[in-house]
Amino acid sequence: MTENRDIFSVSRLNSELRHVLEGSFPLLWVQGEISNLSIPRSGHLYFSLKDSHAQIRCALFKGKANLLRFKPKDGDSVIARAKVALYEPRGDCQLIIESMEPAGEGALQKAFEALKLKLQKEGLFETSLKKELPAHPINIGIVTSSSGAAIRDMLNILSRRHPTATVTIYPCLVQGTEAPADIRQALNNALTRQQDDVIVLTRGGGSIEDLWAFNDEQLARDIAAADIPIVSAVGHEIDFTIADFVADRRAPTPSAAAELISPDQAQISQRVHQLNAQLTLRTQQSLAAKQKQLQQLEQRLTRQHPRARTQQQQQRLDEIQLRLQRSVSNTLLKQQTAANNLNIRLQQQRPSAIIERFKERLSSMQSRLARSTESALKARREKLNAHSRELHAISPLATLERGYSIVSTAKNKVITKSSDVASGDSIDVRLSEGTLRATVTKTSKKTD
Image 1: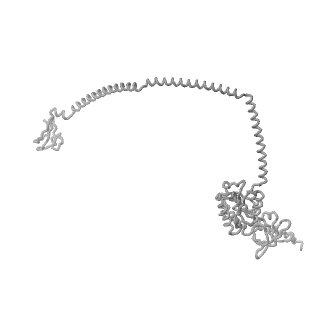
Image 2: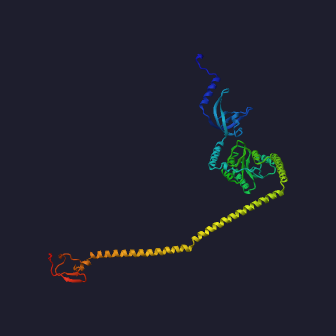
Image 3: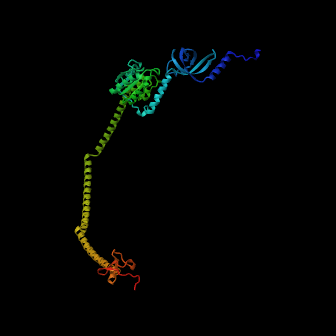
């Protein structure tokens, strides 16, 4: 009955298992300790990741291994980004490593990125804040460990390229918990002295933990506030610290920093020779041009004697003098004519004649005013008399003069009808001249 069985070969089984594993697990992070590390001539890395209970084989191929920021060794605790796979020839489950970093570096990297973003938003990385490095620094300050390889490399290069420079070392710790404060103190000492043309902060390469002192926030602010150009040269080319971003210039290595701040004496000497040759050539060309100009002037002087030039100048001076005399005469004549015209106008407009004319005009106006006033007053008097006559004609006084009278009660109420009083009442009678007091003896409504 074997003909109805689906029998797997080992190769087919391992192939199926590989597809199942690789299709079941996404790219994942794994933390463990490196053991049994092997690096053959191919450059690939083979090792196991283990913890206290288990282990798994791993492969890190050369292309990815070259991107590592540290050199793995047995016993290192790491975090790896990997995919699950099956090595078919042996049927071993393994991890194919894509990237790897020391355990704990992830948290440091996050802190690094957070501080970088914060300072960037504050503008501490702006190009406009960067100071220019001096082309030929005389005094160079170096803030670093006095016993590290970085300072030895820099001193060797400076002695070769720029032997006339004075180098001052400001020793400090460059690694550990006390390093940030020590680096800041050394930098402050250099800035306080104010004797260096440029200052270099440097140390050799290492892990992110080794370089962490140069990611200190206060150190970054001290660098940004410095009034002396600062070069940051920390670690290797692939290493970046906060000090690199805030410094005026970054050098990938300490040796590169030494070359950056020091002019090459050989190049300077060659440039001096080139400039000297150019100066000599230009001087010769200038002398030749001046010599030619001098020869031309000598030829012109020979063709035209100075006496002839003097006579020509004298003749021109005489012409100018005659033109000046004519111009002065014409000007004086014009001024004299203008003065005469002004004198005539002044005689016509002399103040005494104007005053006499105004006096005559004033006298005439006074006479006219008197006549006009008198005529107006006469007309007003006549009009007033006419109104007086009209008023007198309708005045009660005129009626009294014709024999009429005004009768009123003792309370000065005018009596217009007999019913206004009674027998025995006292009444006042106003006549044209004087008044009478009378007593009513009888009243009657009828008039006879």
